[in-house]
Amino acid sequence: MNSAAVETYLRELQARICSALETADGSKKFLADAWRKPDDAPLRGDGVTRILEGGELFERAGVGFSLVAGDRLPPSASANRPELAGRGFRAMGVSLVLHPRNPYIPTAHANVRYFVAEKPGEEPVWWFGGGFDLTPYYVFEEDARHWHSVARKACAASGDGVYERLKRQCDDYFLLKHRGETRGVGGLFFDDWHEGGFDASFGLMRSVGDGFLEAYLPIVERRRATAYGERERAWQLYRRGRYVEFNLVFDRGTLFGLQSGGRTESILMSMPPLASWQYQFEPEAGSAEAALAQYLTPRDWL
Image (cartoon, rainbow, N blue to C red; front, side, top):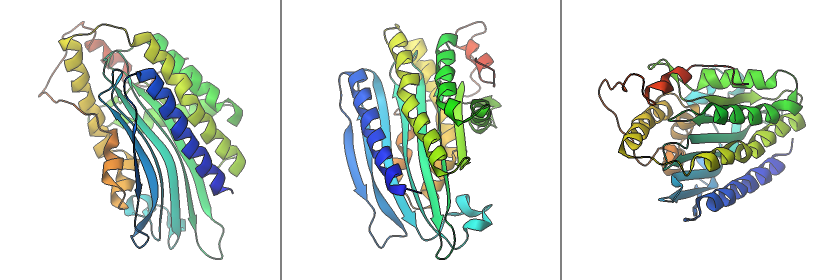
């Protein structure tokens, strides 16, 4: 195990992604908000939350790094893990959510993380997790195929069938159960990953982290000049409401962060700056907006 190498990679990944997104936006820079928890707090650690708001391309883009440690896990993480009882823990990761201004550019999310729980005299319990998923408002099948082709490439070195497993886990995880629909067109999701040992597992996490920009930026470039009006904007805000519902009701990372005493502003940076809800709204039959529903169920994009 080499936790220092993981931390170095994650900090560098945050910087690299922010630099590329600033170049893509072309009008704004990320605000770097460095924070540190008091050493005597129940949850210790530090991080940097980087936020770009009001850009030409991104209405809000948040890319956060955090490294936190504690003496006891919160209920959401330890309830079904008796092997973690009595252990201190460290968790570190990079998480990002991008909310573009143009409704024809999808919202995107990515996260890569590492967790280790230790107890004197016993072997540490560790794992990696992560993934990325895409939430379009108007689906272009070539974009979804590109997204998934990069996802499959990111998993290739980890063995046969890994992409299919991680894609299925993404479809299962990013599901709004009360709506009966997936959050978007999926991607990858993995947690508690330690297959092949530390080096191989770290390699999968790096491959996913490194693959995000390759998956997302070509879609941005294809759609950023597409003209839109009030109708498309209203649809985008309505569908952003679904994003908020998932993050506040189902997302494990949000629950872990809030229950463990994490930094609220950093945890909730994933929220869109604007969203809307309409009672029993139904898009016009046969419209481009109505077409989204057919894609909010798992499918084989490749």
